[in-house]
Structure formats: structure tokens, C-alpha cells
Length: 220
Image (cartoon, rainbow, N blue to C red):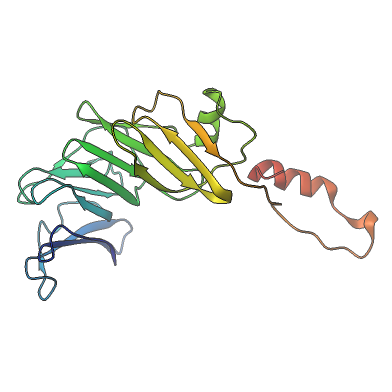
């Protein structure tokens, strides 16, 4: 299964993905083309865990992102020699990153889209990770402002040193790359119900169930 694609030039491109193992888990697949995609060569076969995303800042500096494992806790790798060699970026254990941003050789941001978004940024040669429960992180930093479970869909660089994130219901956040710095809520959309019940008799409406589901999912 191929998951990510990035062309550094009109001729040089990279594809990453994974091969699922019969006993569970997966190994990464990395393919490279130097002729605009006419032919592809597999490189570094079996050297990575399952991969989801690839980005190059230029023809020399690139980043791969995928599953965190015991051997490679962050699941993020970088090259400084056009993919001849790759080194794991140290940092805390991660589940799996689905997206990566690499606008400059010394700037890396990774994130995922499964539930409340976790993200991490390169800081002093390591990945400094935000708590996966971003809504709690926002509350702790005083930036909650009535938001409900901000599911993130994309992260972008706004220039040194600001990062922006967007998500469901029109959510827009901005924050410096350091996870310890506060997020700013620039825009928040409406809210929606977590579940809909239709009953012919008002007395049959399961008010307790509605309240429990709404509280669990953070919509009401």
C-alpha cells in the first residue's frame, strides 16, 4: 500500500508506503524516480517501519514519517544526502504520523488526523511532541475559548516561527513550533450534535444517553 508522494523536481520524486506482515505490523516501502515517474526503484527496502508521508525541502534534505516502533520511537527519519542514508530523529514514542511538512532543511513538522490531533516539531535535533489530547492542551494554555474537540486536518508554516493548524467546524489555530508555547484561536466554527435520536413519544427520548454521548465526544 503506497501512502505518500512528493516530487522534488519535475524528474526526481519519492513514494512511500508499507507492506503488511502476516503476523501483524508492517515494514516501510520507499521508491524513487529520476525520470519523471517513467521508472521507479525501491531503495532502503525493509529499513523502516510502515510509512505514510514524505517531503523534501530541497534535492538533498528530506523527511519520512510513519509508525513509531520500539526500534524507531518517533517513526520519523531524515536524510541530508539525497536519500543515500537515513537517520531516525530521536524523540518520544509516537503511534503513527500521517503528514509531514519540511519547508527548510532544519524545520520539520509532523501530525496525524485520527481523533484530536497530535503534532510534533523539530527542536534541537529532536521531535518535541504536543499532547495527543490537543483540546486538553488548549485548556491548560488558556486558549480553549469554548471550542469542542478540535480535530485537526492540516498544518502549515506561516514563516519563522509560526505554525498554523486548521480543522473541523472552521477551526483555525496558530502557534509557534515549540509545544510549550500557547496556541491562539483565530477562528472557531459552529457546533454539531454528537448523535440524533428520533422518537414518536417524547417520554421515550433517552436524555441520559444523549448527554453521555455528547459529553464523551465533546460536541454538546
